[in-house]
Image (cartoon, rainbow, N blue to C red; front, side):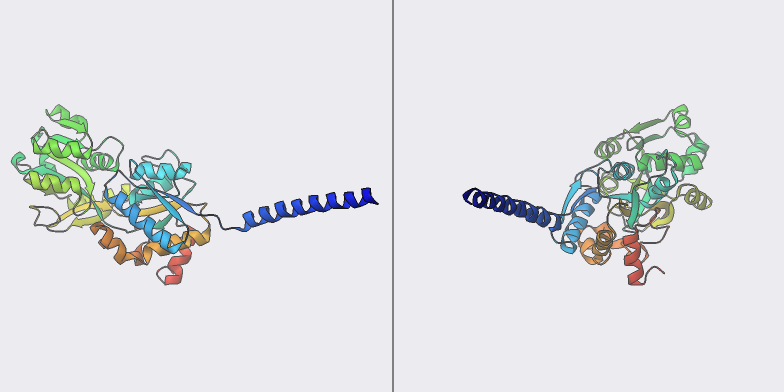
Length: 336
C-alpha cells in the first residue's frame, strides 16, 4: 500500500506540473501579441521622416500596445522594395511609383506581389525646374534651341527626382548627352551639396520633386535668384499617361521670389503596407491616418493638403488597396 500510495503521489505531482505547463502555454497563446510597425520613410529630418513620426503616433493611439519604428531610408523606390522584401511593414511612396511597382516597369523589373495601398493623396509633390535668372533661360525649349551649356544638378541616379529629370528632358527631345555635347554638365549629389553648388555658381539648374516649403528648394530660392519654369501644356498629358504623373500647379509664393503659378506635373505621397497585415489591423491603420487630418497638418505643413475622402482613388494611389483599407473607405461612404 505504501508503494501504491507513493506512486499515486508521484503521479499527482507529474499531473500538476503538466497542468501548469499546459496552462502557461495556453495563456501565452491567448495573450495578445504586441504589434510592431517598421515605417520606411526617408532621410533624417526630411518631410517623410516627420510624416512617419506623426503617423506612428496616430497608430499607437488607435491600436493600444502597438509600437512604431521610423526607418531612415533612401525614400520612394527604396521604400517599396523594402516592403516587397518584408524589411518594413509600412512605408511612404509616390502615386506614380506605386503604378510602376504594380505594373513592373521603370524601376521594378517585375510587379510587386507583397505590397498593398492604404492611404493616398497625402500631399502634393511637384516636379520643379529651378534655373538661375542670370542664365537668361525662360523656358525648357530654349535649352535645346540655344544648345545652352547647362550646368544641371540632380539627386543621385535612380531617385525619383533624377528619373523625373530624365523623363522631362526626354519629352523636350533633350538627353544628358546632348547637354554635355553643348558644353554643359550633369552632376548628381545629395540635396545639401546641390544647395551649395547653386549658391556658389557651380550649377545653374536643378530639377527635383518638391512640395511647398521643401527645404532644398527653399534654400536655393533664398540664396539665389531663380526662376521656376513651367512644363509646356502639350507635354503634360503625355507625361502623365506614360509615367503616371498628375497635372499640378505650384501655387504662388510657395518659394521666395516665386509670386506666380507654375504649371507642371507631380505626384502624391502615399502610405503603403504589406498585404499580409491582417484585415482588422489594416482597417485601423487606415482609420488612424484618415480620421486625423488636423493632427497631421500640425505635424508638417505639407500634410495640410491631405484629402482623405479621395485617398482611395486610383489616380491618388497607384497600387491595389488592402482589403482592410477598402472596408474603411466603404464604411465612410467615400468609396462605393
